[in-house]
Length: 79
Image: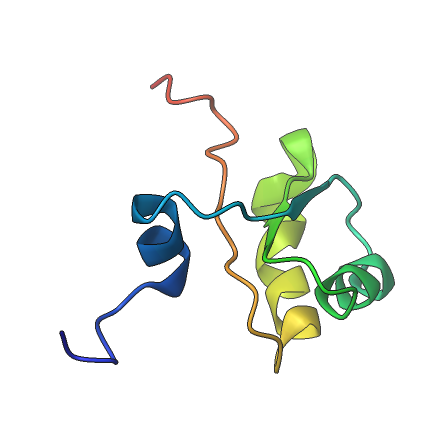
């Protein structure tokens, strides 16, 4: 499989490997940067109702890390 198309997070899930992550409910870039460099496999940035305004600006704070960054739809999937 092409390395550019491989999702390491999903591959590890398929293999049944344990991944340790953090659900971050802070909207400060400082907390995102600390979490990104703390050795977790994944980091979910969730600001709740504030997510649509802040989560995009927090992603650059995790730059350079190998973290998978899943996202949560703030509407809960409801239209």
